Amino acid sequence: MSPLQKSLVKWTVSLALGALFVWVAARNWPLDKVFRGSPVLMGRFFAMVPDALGSFSGPLDAAARARILAAGGWTLDLLVLLPYVLFLSAVHFARVIRWDYLLRPIARFRFWELNRVAAVGFMAMFVFPFRLGELVRPYLLRERHKGTIRMTEGLAVIVVERLTDGLLVSLFLVAVLFRMPSTYVESYQRVRFGAWVALLIFVGGLVALGLMFVVRDKLSAFFERFRVVTGTAAGQRFLSILKAFLAALQVLPSVRYYLLFVVLTAAYWALVGLSYNVLAVGFELPVPVLASFAMMATSVVGMMIPNSPANVGSFWVFLLLPLELYIGERAFDTQAIAYALVAWAVTVLQYVVFAGWFLVRGKVSFSGVTHAHIEE
Image (cartoon, rainbow, N blue to C red; front, side):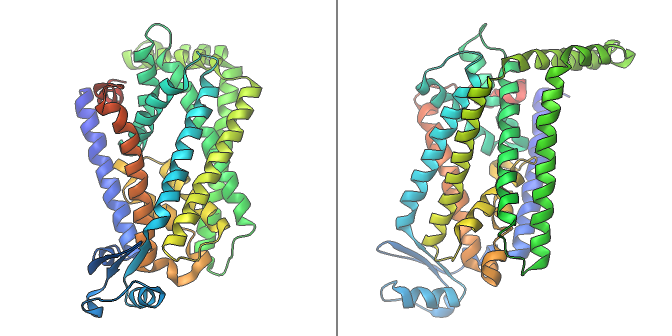
């Protein structure tokens, strides 16, 4: 099977995953009702007015918005989109700075160079299926610094970055569990089970990575004992990739740089949680800060599984998963799914705008983005 055919298979499977998550979302949240009705824009407020209310006239004051919500419509204070976008922008730059700390053992980069590569890489990571976009950042760095940076070094950094992300958001979720309402037993048990499983997986991943580094020479020698590895083309390729990756682990950051990376990581995930709280205010959803942190954690853990293109469906499902515990039946209203869809849409737009600025101006190769996940 050619690389292009493999890519087509991955996209097909990922589209099926997206359809599955959209179906799961539609079972619990009224996706169809979000776009049903007449859109109305008055001043700083937007509303989707259900047809049952007839032709709408008058200001979108508190009483009018309450009638729209009671009839199954939804409203949004557009003013909150500004701080939400500012939060997302702060998150972007925090991610660029923390990436620099992981890359310092390999080379020193100017901030704006890393920002260009990261903007395009973050978009690819969110948009490409099966998290294939993770390959774009190390690929682009290698292409810009041929002979200096190896792909395996960049991948080793990405593995450490992703495992640390998973561990910290799992710790966020476990910490929130101790203050999480348990009125809705089934939902609480799902979130609790997912939190502990995620924590176990990411702790295990970091421990396994550390052990691989400690026994890297013995690990290669162990696999070289097997004829199926040394005597086949696939086995030899596996062995060469393994050796290259184990060698690349030597470029992991010092304890000081890693701790700075962890602090920045915790800070930017906290910003993501706060951004969800700010956006909830615009939808008049009574989401406490702890609930927004729980939503941040479940959405991040959920998106770390093989994803659909642009995380369609999975983003909404995992974001709204813990909401019932905090606001009860309102978590299944049209307002809640509209909240999740707007959070997703603005996030996608932010990625596309930040990356598009560099792609359109030719500062980053578009062909590098499209070929990274196929070639590698």
